[in-house]
Amino acid sequence: MIEWNPALAVHIPVIDEQHRLLAERANLLLHALSTSSPELITNTFGYFEAFIQDHFRTEEELLVKSGKIDSPYAQKHMAAHETFLCEFRTFRESLSSPDMNPAQVDAFSRWILAWYQAHIEHDDIRLGEFLRSPE
Image 1 (cartoon, rainbow, N blue to C red):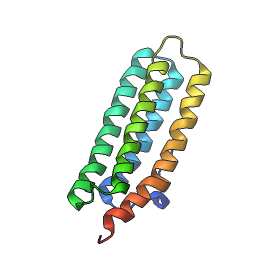
Image 2 (tube, rainbow, N blue to C red):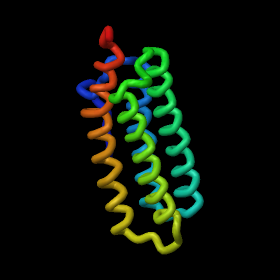
Image 3 (cartoon, one colour):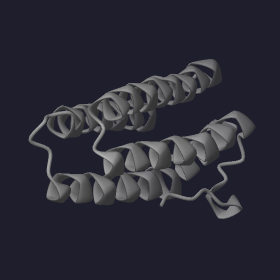
């Protein structure tokens, strides 16, 4: 189970709220996978992907508004978003297959948990600092 807690705050309210909701949606996705219901899995993957794209768009819009979008850090951060989406879609394809197996679900569960922690604890806390810095 993925949990948001105040130690993960980036101190940008919209991002902190999205991170809290992201944990909820990831948990819904993990629950859907445990049901083995193809329709529920497909719908929940779509729901999660739409939300994560909105989250990434929010971060990128904040970078644009800050005037820092062209910095090497911002470019690296946005590239990490694309990497996540590619990996996520690969998992989505394999887990939407009738041949899905428990090992694949376990691999996805470990991957999404590790990504969530790393994304917030490292990438987005740094993003918050970067956006709040005067230069």
